[in-house]
Image (cartoon, rainbow, N blue to C red; front, side, top):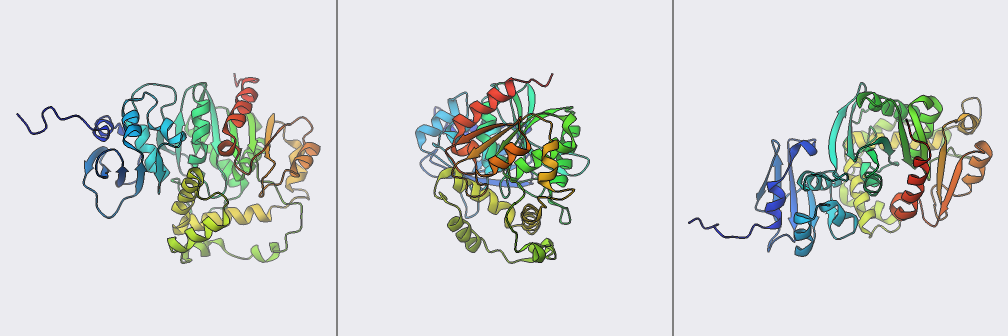
Length: 392
């Protein structure tokens, strides 16, 4: 009789046994995840060549998943898988949400509309990383500056029972391609999303955008209204109406210099945590991890600077100014504003109402990321809005 005969299978062994590589494009040849709390001692899971195996810990790991034993037991047996525990705050995922969430997706029990799929989509322009769930009418989700597709994980879960939800890493961010000399303006991002729709054989889709992603969604509506259903703009970034004293200088600064800028992680992380309120909360900490993961690469740093500069420099008025063009938006739109948003003040609502009298508006007691700060109200409003006008 073998030494293992009669031994109870651990939660981690159950998860690794049902690892399905078809649900998770890792995006690299080798990845190592630290799993804490599933047994007496932490263990590592190595993902390589489409296989996952449990190994002893060593000094290096790419992502960390931590929970108590009861939570790991529930993850191993619950039909909703690990994402339910993650969204409820019982499971902590740090360093690399792409890897952590991908592992949860690939080890979830079969079936269920909320089961996630993470893959790369090769478009005519670049390779984009997406996370999908559900079936039905397609809904594309676009993150903000410095964020990734992970900022829409709660929205994926909320809408997946009725919709084919697709959250994408915009080019330059997360696990998508980061071309060094790309424009990284609203038009560039909008064209990338149209290429994604083409690659996915989607004629039309609803689009949800937060912050910079909201600005990209508006650009899609202005340039490609025939490819869209409805727009949901969550605290969208809009052209500044106040003076921009640094504009003349920033126009001449090549953002590619970010590629050679020294960026030691301890220093950058300290600065970011001081600047972002609530950085000790789980969602915010995970978001900071995602920002650092891109920013600490040369091409990711250059992309961030280029996108940030374009937000600041966008002309508000004139023939091609944002506020000049906005009244021509014909796609039905819902704007969601945070009363405590320090980045896009709610005063912008007045200007949008004047430009788009038929647009709808929702004010929430939150900051800049409604889908994370007020998920229940945000998702209820989105579902009601999208249900009113099916794509077909």
